[in-house]
Length: 443
Image 1 (cartoon, rainbow, N blue to C red):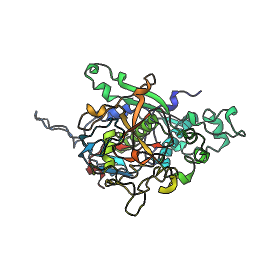
Image 2: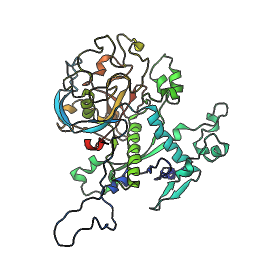
Image 3: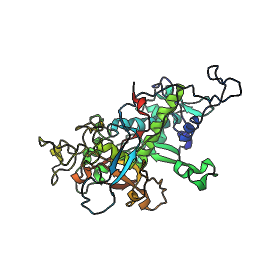
Image 4: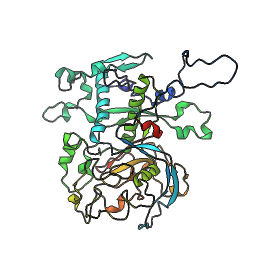
């Protein structure tokens, strides 16, 4: 059996895309934001005259526009249904809220983008098993990415060394040695700022608010069969995540925990590179809150039912404007039987694609029926990091946007839905956001 050492912090060599990434605790990166100790340069040394001068950071750097993201400007809108609540559920009462600006992925995270995450974790584990490890400047064992880049997974000698990653003999088909997807695990360590900020926790040690867990990150490809009884969807199971034809399609079969782990890894991936260049680290990538998602989906159209406006699902030429389940179930009428490319159809006024239809999207928010009645009107956010021992009701996360298998009602910007955080579906994906000033998007 392989041990936790395979998940220890790792360092990417400069020749491996010039990136240095820590797989371990997010807390390591948080420390760097509190300042580094060392000798001051002559330029930053303060005059010794007994007066207050302040300490300015020497790092004058503005990160360029994050690839594939668009800026959603700050604004105010009416959150909730823009039309009659036909279900009379009253789980989304209309309320005016204000949202700060943020950057958001223009499309849902694609198979190709998520595959980068999977392959990085796979290579980290394999390199450790093969002994491609060195010590970094802090004395912490790190993956030697220069050697890891030479790993050949179809080589007999390599397969023997990473045998712990290979499916056991009884699980092989015709004796073929394949990687065991259940063993591609990401070690997550997150500091829970919400709990730490409570007054009663002010004097408690930091360790009590660090959540550590190992997360299986390979998508559940069997969802294509599991989600639909008496329906033939085996080709999607076998090809959707592994065939190049679907590179630019939204990743599915990813539960909320996996989507969150992806955002955590993406943060480390960026900040480690910035630190290697002596640049300041940036905010965390994360899932959008429910309010952020709805505000972004409206694209500045505060009272519109859909991202493109009101009130129809077709344009004046009769063309459907999203990928969903038209009519009584004419799936291919909109141009896609299942999912379509993540950049299909027209973007909304913020430049965001498929904020209605294609796949439903995870948010960071807890689904609570009466949440709109008490949440703040400034960046509203209701979060709860549910434990495995918590009841199912506490594990519900808000879904937004509707999907390729949903009727038009779920495509409305104000429609709420939910799914359990440990559940994966063939119609649920996600996109991430990051808090950066708009000036950082200028090249």
